[in-house]
Amino acid sequence: MTNNYDKLIFKIPVESEDYTECSDFVVISIEEITQAAMDEGRNKIIISTNLRLGLPMENINKIAGPFIEAWAFEIFSDVLEDENNEYHLINVEAGERLSMADIILQFRRERKRQSSVTANVDVKATSKDIKNSGRSPNITSFARIRTAYIEDPDYIFVILSIKHKVYSRREPDTKMMTGVMEVVDFNAYDLKYISDSDISYNPALGTGQLQVRDIHYVTRQERTIWEFSQMLDKKCMASGKGFEGWYHYAKKHEWIKNE
Image 1 (cartoon, rainbow, N blue to C red):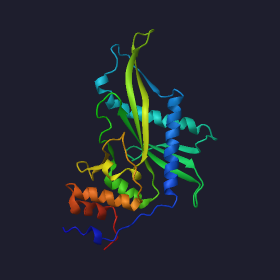
Image 2: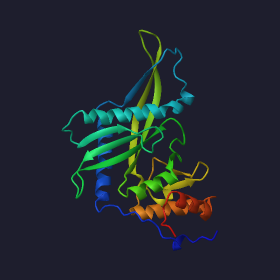
Image 3: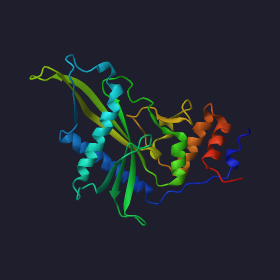
Image 4: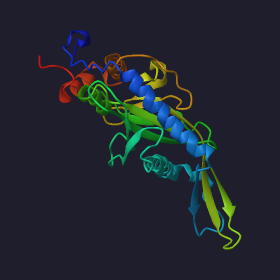
């Protein structure tokens, strides 16, 4: 099939004029809430076991994700308990199973047509103790995020990368080992503003997975939702999928108008 990408009639998403301000607002709020939890010493997850020899440290990263996600959900929920919290957080929900977001946050913010802004947060756990942890993690499905921006050009997808370390301590009364998972660092990014060079496309899974080359070191690139969508399209076509594979997704998910 001939590559006629530039000749297609696309459904072009156009975000609101205040998208950047809203995005920066929620990302900064997420960072401040996370930093406050760390500063206040609420950054440790205690894992009680009946193991005398401690946790299997060589495989601890396999169970870290759900613990870190639960910790993140809890610190946001703690803020929500204060109805007059300084972050203007008004709702916290856990993402449904297999949804793109682990946590959905809603903040009060006056806009032209709305009085709130929503952040869809994907929590990524990385280990301080494992070399190359945080390199090329799967972020989300290409087709799902591409479609999400068509359906809602103001969709804000935030990656909250949380770095942790794990150690064991022996409880003096029981002599059993307790695991401690400690949050030591974090970063938050709006996917839309992650630079071209930092995003890669893995064609191996389904419609392809977006990956971040190194989640700890990301460069910001200002762009529109449409520019971001075009960048994703080009990465898909440059992979083994080619134009024909991309065109199949475009027709199936209705990214282009009927010809």
